[in-house]
Structures are given as structure tokens and as C-alpha cells.
Length: 493
Image (cartoon, rainbow, N blue to C red; front, side, top):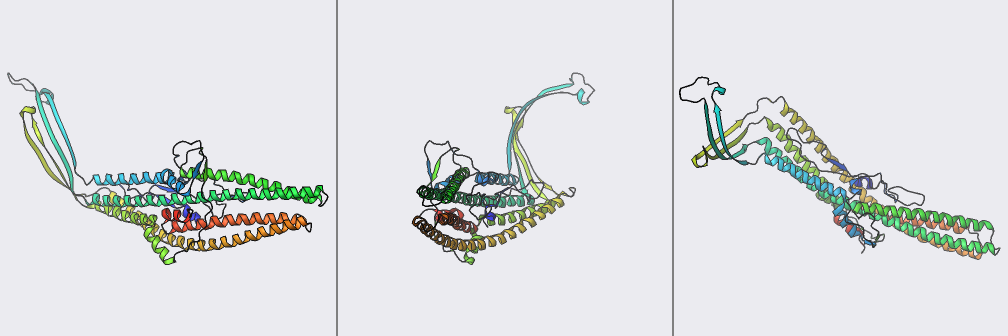
């Protein structure tokens, strides 16, 4: 389910060129899988069960424009700080903002065809004419064949304005709807930035928790090895016990090395997502939060989703825009009425000039344009059908997202409780195994097995906490409440 959210499509539909209908593939920019599964190893797994981000996933929502320069100190990064930085510097959001600006420019371009155009020009010229060169090859006594120089002064203001052009009116309305869709897509991009940042922050917390768990397991394994070695030296246990404890100790050391490496790499992914300066050292101030969430009813969640989700509202505006562009294409067959006029002064020079003007209206009636209007209408109709189909698909997808989010939230809450109980039991088993080994009633095989059980239970607990928090994030996204909800669900109380 998480992959469905984090691979959401972000694009801004800009109106097409005036000679064609709206394009169905208007600047898509996909948010690729930022989390391929809901398991803790969403970005890849290794022998220690750790997770890390793959650099091959080059989604703009996992990139940023770094802000400032790295400082000498260690930055303390809270969850709220990470969200605020991402909303300033995340590449996906910056690109969505640029696309929104481009849509606004397209709207003004279409609007310019409906607004008057006013210009002014001032001309002062001198002309000398050779009549013979113009074909006047006869002559009169005392009259030269060369006329001039003749001075001409002309200063005018020119105005052109459409009086009635239904084609341009409908295109401007379509461009206005596309601009509205772009604004909704920008808001949706903000939600995806919060979603991506929340996911990366949670992954970093989980990676840090795995380092802590691995460190504790190394210390436990070292204590077991030291005790087994001392008992072997005293002749109380066979050499196999010391060797077994040493193998366990080395294995835990190796897993600690891998966990630390994965933690460092995950911090780099988080820094890239939120736009931290390259090379900036930071620590997370939050720990794995756990706060049970009482989910809303399915009916309430669906109602909020269809009302609040910006991607759905953007799709609705795209359909409206496509309807306008289709109307504009069919309006190419209609006549248009335009006004043109000018007013100014003209004469031989500035001092010898008088007022002049010209006013007129033109009724243009299209008769045959080689089938261009028919072609534009067909393309616009195809685009409208595609946008309607995409809207219905998105409506069904939202229903799926909400239902799966509620299911995952309930399941993840149960997983946390089971994992916590399992971890407590595993620790009790380890304590008893150590006591039996110390008392000499069992070899250290029981202790090694108990340590393995504790490590597995620790990993399950860390994974379940991550899954629970991610389920809350996913629910916030599903109902269109990500920007406020993620902060509310994940900030430390």
C-alpha cells in the first residue's frame, strides 16, 4: 500500500498550443517508489535486517536543493525541523512550483487574445521621388521629374480588440481551469513531500534503533564469551563452549558494523530529501514514537478523502479544462468580430499637422481551413475522455487507499503489541539461560539461542513500530490530511 502512495504521479497540466487541443501527457513527473514495501527493509535489506535507501531511485521527491553551507557543529534535527526544511528545499516541490508558474503563464497567454492591444508610433520622414523611375517619362517645361524632398509627420495611437471570439473565450476558460489544477497539484506535492520526509525520518529512527540493539547484543555476546573463556580456563566447561561464544561475539560485531553503515547511509538519504547542506552532521532528536490512534469510520474517511485530497480536486479541474478546450475546438467554425482603430496627428511636420483617425470592425467567417478545426476537435475529445477515465480511476484508487490504510493501521497496532510481548519473553528467556549456564546445569548453547531470539524479537519490535507509524502516515495521506496529520501523529508528545 505504501508503494502506491509514494509512487503517486505529480504533474501540472498546462494548456496546449492554440493550434491544438489540450495534451493528455502534460508534463508528468513521477514520484517513484520511495518505499517499495511496508517491511522495515523498504529500501533494501541486508544480513542484519537493516534498511537503506537505494541511490538508483532518482525521484525528485527524494532530492533537494541544498540550503546554505555545512556548519562545524552537530545539528539537532527534530521531526518538525525536517518537515519545514523539506517544504523549502525539496526538489519535487520546487518543480511543482515551477509547473504552477508555467500554468499561470499559459493562462495569461490565452487571456492576451481577449484583451485589447494598444500601441503608439511617431514617424518623421522626408521623401524624394523620381517620377521617371515610377514610369512618368514625359516632361513639362519648367517642371522637374524629381519631386521633393517632401516631409511627412505622423503620430498615432493604435488599438485592436476582439469584440466576439468564442474560440478564444473557451480556451481562456480552459487555461484557467488548468491553472487551478496546477495549484491543487502543488498542494498535493506538499503532501507528498511531508509523506516522503516522514517516511525517511522514520526509517532513520529505525536504523538508529537497530544500531542500539546491535550494540547491546555485542555487549551481551562479549560478556558471554568472557565468562565462557574464564570457565574454560578454570576447566569448568569444554572448549566448544568458548568457541561457540566467540563465534557468536564475532557475528554480533559484524552485524553492528553493517547496522552502523546502514544508519549513516540512511541519514544521507534523509539529508538529501530535506535539503541539508552537503556534509552537515546532524542527530535526530525524536525517538520511535508510539501512540495508539483510534481510526475514523470508513464512511467518514472516504468523505474526507474526496473533499480534501488535492490530487482528486486537480483531476476534477483537469476534466473541466478539457471540456473547455473541446468547446474551443468546436468554436473554430464560428465567426469572430474584431475592432481596430487609430487616432493621431499627421502633416508635413509637427507644426503643420492636424488630427487623423481610422476606425473599423472586421467580421471574419471561417469557410474552409483544410480540416484543421475537425482535427482539433477530435484531439480535444480524446483528451477529455482520457481525463474523465483518469478521474474515475483516481476515485476508485482513493477508495482502495483509504480501505487499505485502515486495515494496515489496525494490523500494525496488533503487531506492536505482539512484538512488545515477544521481546519481553525473549529477554526473560535469555536471563534464565544465563542463570542456567552460570549454575553449570546447561552449556552456553541455550544462551546463544536465547540471544538469537532476543535479536529477532528486537528486529520485529523495531519493524512493527515503523510499520505502525507508517500506517498512520499513510492514513493521513489517504484522507488528504498529510501535511497536518503527519506532524500531529509523529511529533513527540
